Image (tube, rainbow, N blue to C red; front, side, top):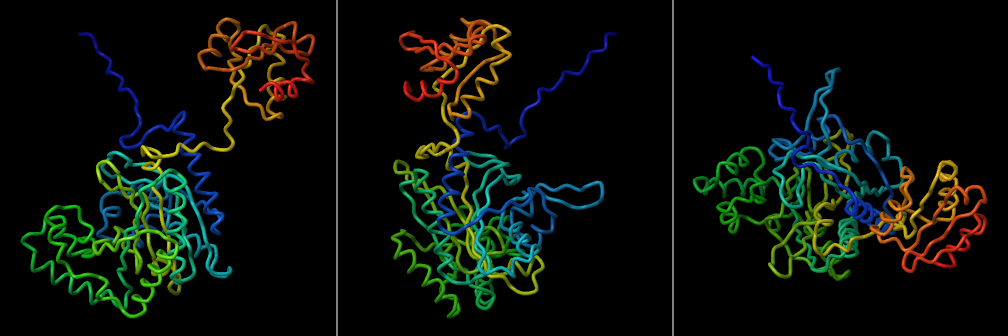
Length: 430
């Protein structure tokens, strides 16, 4: 009997992860350059933390009872027995770096921006991937309310310059440890009265993280939440003052906001201000969260600081922006679309081709080329297909004479130019 070889499985990208290529790659890069530029103007400086951290950087900070820790985090065990995790968000790693590198000794606060991929084993859908990109801004070392407003204003400006036109801020305060415990007792009591109507997922949250029920997407729970106790009515005087000041800053900068009493955010480390910036689709009225964050004054202590470290931050979901119909398709500064196609013919020309390309590079003139090809017709056809305005033809004769033929692709006129005069000629004609 003939042994059949097992059919080879075609390799594809991992579910929820994808290749970013061609124009979309440049759009991501263009967005980052714009976000970085705006963040720098507002006083932020760059930081890059590892994609992989010790697992307890996240388990001790994000909190049990959150979807990220319970089911979404990518974890691994090394040969040496270390338990590591792919970062599901930037903030905990940045705070870990702040403590580890002794940044408490620097003038406070320190302000960072960070950009890169994060990983969550979430259900893939439009604008949501298992590997996705965030632009993060964090201010560490001060509890002043103006800093809450600063991160909102910076994120708002980035989104606006990326093309968003129908933005609004949803905001709430969940208090601090002084006033939150009393609120949570009242909240638990309220949910226990409605326990028979709560879906199973929210009954479980009642045991582990009752605040998260306010953020539930279950229809039954959303209905129950309409009459749930409000955090704002339980705030202590200092939290009330802090929140009032944040709202006053937003009003002064003419940023529209609405107070969302059910906004708590999904991560356990948040205190006081919690924020989402949403874009509303003008046709459907559907809102999509583009940016989220808040204050996290107790995260530092959870990660090993001897005392609390006041901090506030915000994260922008880059994938959703790049895929939005309103995105301005920002182009990176370093990319110039070539208008000239470089063509070479014969070994002597091929031998010197890289030197000619280097002359053009030093003159900041980008080109397209296919120097592996030998046929003039094939190279010209490619130039036409790419819609090139001009072609440089470098053949055996030109290689010997130190010249090129410069061809106008629109009318097929051409002129022979000596290499020392090439840059001057191109700048004059293009």
